[in-house]
Image (cartoon, rainbow, N blue to C red; front, side, top):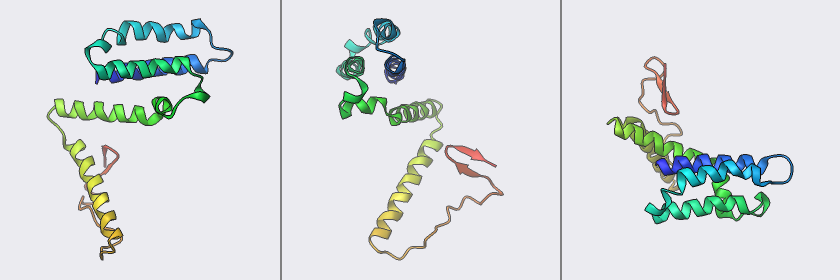
Length: 148
């Protein structure tokens, strides 16, 4: 988890260096290189996955943004941030022994999937199925936060 967060930070440093106005210079890449050397390089040899992730991330410095492979473009996609954020949130909840929000999210996805499968199979189910949350008077979930 820590490595993933550090790698996201490195990606942001690389994004800043690459998107700087003018032609890329060694000075614009220095913060990213120093960060990778100090924070990620010592951790990379401990796991082949870490090493591969670091190598892939460092490739962002070599190739211009318009010539990135789909695998490298995925590193710059905001969905990577969301995925790491979700993992961090679930780890925090698990460490506190409170997994109800993570479970609720999984159950909601399972319910949506099941309803869609039932509709695809042409089963007779209502267009809208009450979740049984009690409505606005008891509060309802919006995203991962309780709204009252």
